[in-house]
Structure formats: C-alpha cells, structure tokens
Length: 211
Image 1: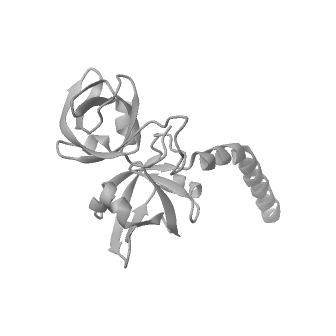
Image 2 (image 1 turned 90 degrees about the vertical axis):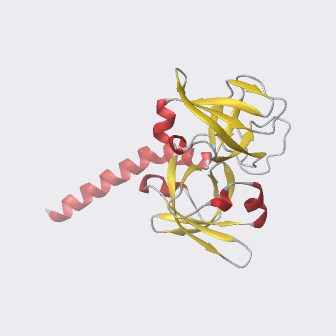
C-alpha cells in the first residue's frame, strides 16, 4: 500500500525484453532497497528484482503493459517513485494501492495564478468513481479532483507538487496512470446488484407503459 506522496523522481536508464517481461533499470537515490519489495513507479506497483548503488531493476509483464503506459517508457523517461507504506508512517495522502484503473489522456494544460490546471480525459467506465474534491492518484501522485467535466475531470497542481514530481512536465496528449479511491471502487461493487435490479424494474415499467 502507498499514500501518493512521492519520495523521489527517478529516471529510466535502460529498457530490455527478458523472460521476466519488459525490464526497466531505473536510476533512483534509494540506499536501503531489498529484493522483492514493492515500489510504486508512476503509480504502478512493481517488484524490485535487483538493485545496486543508485539503481534498481523492475519488470512489467504482458498484463501490466496492457493496462498501463509502461510500454511508452524509454531511456530518459522521468518517473515518480514511492516505496510501500510502513505501518508506523503518517498517511499524508490517501490510500493508494498501486493498481492502475485506467490510462487517462491530458486534454489541456493551463497556467492559473498560483497553480497549473490540467484537464484529463477518462474512459466513461471510471467516471462514476470520482467526485468533486475527492481523491485521485495520477502517475502515483495523491491529488484532489478540482472540477468534474464531461468526459473527465480537472486537477489543480500546486507549486510544491510541480517541483517534487514529474507532473509539471505534462503536455496535451500525454498518457498518465489513474487510480480511483479504493473506497469508491468497493462502494460501486457493493451497489452493482441493486443498480442492476433498479435498471431491470425501470425497463419493465417502460415496457408496461408502451403496451
């Protein structure tokens, strides 16, 4: 589990295809890594396979590549890094699992007086998971939904976030990892049977009126 508070910005040093999948060597400042530990890399939870002074290796399998933008990463790509949460840590952001729900697309970027406004286009299937001023993780960063828009939402990025993450690099067309609040996902799952039942009843009512 993670909190969406970025510890460091790393950089892809090399990419190669191995039996483990698409293997990435990432430059990072961590000095006490362990093989097998989890790191959220742009919000996608991956496992440390090997590590050394100033670097670690992680690999993405086919399923992960299908659900993320990791296939776009190449040497020089900058990445947000967060190590897994200790039970004694403060939960400064929100509960982030490192499970990417969808890949969003940056629709617009606009400088406001004291923030950078970023509009994201999202798949229709995930739109109900977001509420105004609710939590969202974008490329692993814990953020607040600034505004709901048709087909997506808007983020307001403060100066601290721009300095300590890669989000200041976003341009229209960029693809980003999006994770919804896990509580919202559980609520929607629990409500699904009732929503299906309500939909079926409405269909019957419509049929009765037509006939």
